[in-house]
Amino acid sequence: MASTLISNNVVANTDRSRKKKKKKTQARDQQLQQQEDDKNHNKWKSETQQQIYSSKLLQTLSQVHLSPPPPSATATATRRGRAVREAADRVLAVAAKGKTRWSRAILTNRLKLKFQKKHRKQPRVVSATGTTRSPKKPKVSVLRLKGKSLPAVQRKVRVLGRLVPGCRKQPLPVILEEATDYIAALEMQVRAMTTLANLLSGSTSSSSSSSASSSSAPPPS
Image: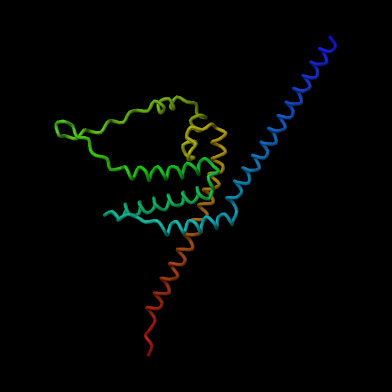
């Protein structure tokens, strides 16, 4: 009887020690993960990271090749703006080094777009009578109908998941973590692009003013 009680106490003490060790390990892992997240979020605020991003962005923009311009000037500006935005997002995802879900989603989406462009031209389906078939009517999504009946908090979480790349079907903790890093990266992107725009506009205005002054100067006698 006494030996049974002693063995039960030993087993109970062993279980308690295992639980304590497990809690300590989980707490240490959470602390390390939090420190890593803080480090990743703070790196977007550094001047060094902004300079690296600006230099890579300039290199990428110099290699952007636009297709022949459409007849409309508005369409030309829209296409150029889209190309600049895609290049800026792609460089931002590369700067994140694929450590976040949103950066991997941007890079993966870029590959998907390239694949779709290669297979965009598909043969038109012609019926037996020689007439082309009319496109199918878009079906109403069942998920969209269900989304209208969701509570306000869940609707906001779903909207936030759609705004952050790669987080459309992720749980709330993952969405919040990715959104925090994505917003910090976007803020750095805005600062870098604003600085570049100011530098380019300043150099353009200085060159135009120097050319105007040289043209208005009287010829030497």
